[in-house]
Image 1 (cartoon, rainbow, N blue to C red):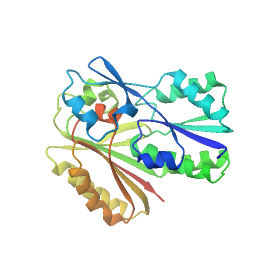
Image 2 (image 1 turned 45 degrees about the vertical axis):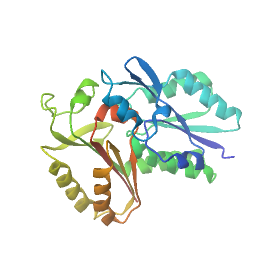
Image 3 (image 1 turned 30 degrees about the vertical axis):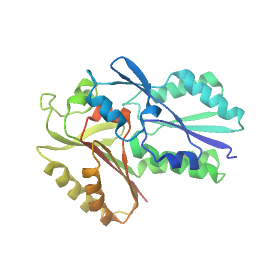
Image 4 (image 1 turned 180 degrees about the vertical axis):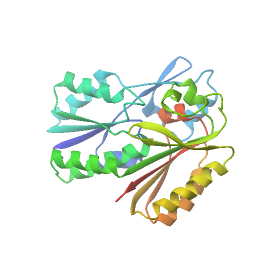
Length: 278
């Protein structure tokens, strides 16, 4: 058994087999839909949450995991023989999850290093998987933490939304500077940098997204890309079209439906393109 165990939260988008392969513990956030609270872990079936959101009376509300859930998970891992736990979470600007993890670590008395990924979705996955690989190989705590920092610095996350309505209703629009909340139906591409969402392109129609992607590819051609993640809310058509274009960069590409936490705030027909460089 690895002496270091990796914990994360369900805001990341990851292939289920990787969770099993690298023995990653995923703490679920929760979503309230029309007064009923669901564990995010129970909403992973393709299209399930989107269908529920489409038919809900009000915008669903997301909640961070309780402090006690973190404490129980950490205690369990220590009892099973872990010498140290590295807990990697969604950016503090998007959720209070990382602070709940810190409180849970203090409550449990376990040896836990809590890390703010400064990202979410597959950019969070990049850090989690690389850390878990090293842990399984018997790396030291300092080596695992250094790798997470390296991956974070070499990652980029871009998100495209087709409406600002969910961001406005969910209270995230205040963190998206430079946009007018009255322009709800414009296409916007944002970059997540230093834990903040910063608009970089806005316009009408899907050509806004495609023009941005073409420009991104030209820039990325000058770098060595290790892996690419594409996440989507809605149909996979646009994401798969992006994948075809991005294949020119010569890196493995993973296309996945994002989870309920991200879908709640982005709304339908949103996407994210995430890149990890060598």
